[in-house]
View 1 (cartoon, rainbow, N blue to C red):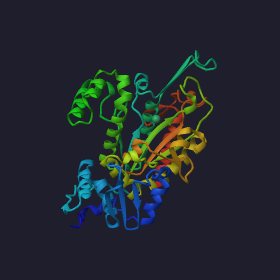
View 2 (cartoon, rainbow, N blue to C red):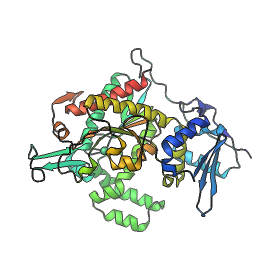
View 3 (tube, rainbow, N blue to C red):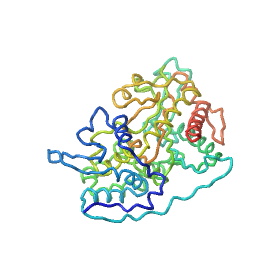
View 4 (cartoon, protein in one colour):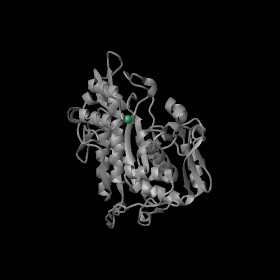
Length: 424
Ligand SMILES: [Zn+2]
């Protein structure tokens, strides 16, 4: 029996975008299909998209999505919970029966205030990482520590920078700037906290055992791994388990908010300056957008749904546009050069350059999981020989946030890019 989706009310939603074959094919070739790695797994024709699997060693059809289902699929992805979407996918895969999809409550109508043109927008800001102290920055391994011992030319006895503090300050300033324009803004985390709404220490104390026990119960981890993780100290546990687990939670927090745009804030380092004990002479800005999907990402149902959403929505196209504006603003305001593919191994080997300068497709967890257009900005290199001193200063107070000029300029760059993006 023909499979029918009853989605009349869902089509009212903002995500129901008609997609032509040409748009979808171009998106696949330009952003998603990194070095042809998905050729065996995905076929796109003017009539349908077919996903293939090779579980038995033979090529088998996993799912067929005909052209007239493309738009509704995206709408459903953005409206429904991941669990509901997985059920739809499994039913679609099994074929045979028709069913009705209950729609959720309609989106809340936002305000319309004269002089506040962005008041209907919802923006989620993700301050990268979580440290609000050097102690936590060391646990999450997102810190710089320069000392005269390692670096005799250092102008100070020692110098410490935590990326999570810089990103939180930037996010806090940007939030206030956008709120003044009437934008509804939320942050994925509080100061020195995880996206679970508590500090890492509190999570370890109150939630580690319970979480691992429930993962064991639903067979997401085996008994041996459970035992191994339970015994682990908090530094190792962060790297082995918590870092990725927390990113999943971040994506849930973001997607629950249903933003029009997600802003992910990071500060970079020179990868060749490892182990970051002395300043570097490189300073660059760049931004990441979704893309470069690997066949490994298509192993689970959730992964396939994410891929289809990226393929069938214009989130990636919109991400490139706003990220291109961001890189322009960062470079102009901070006077930092724009990164090229040849500037870093990860850009050259794992990313695709787009036609917007400094904007690269990168297969990062948040790039795959966030269900909105996004700008993932890497503002500057913290370990640069002048930046590292500038980032230590505490001379500026913006909206009650005590910080340095570089952070204020970074926040203004995000703000300008957002305003330009949403202003016709
Ligand atoms: Zn970072």
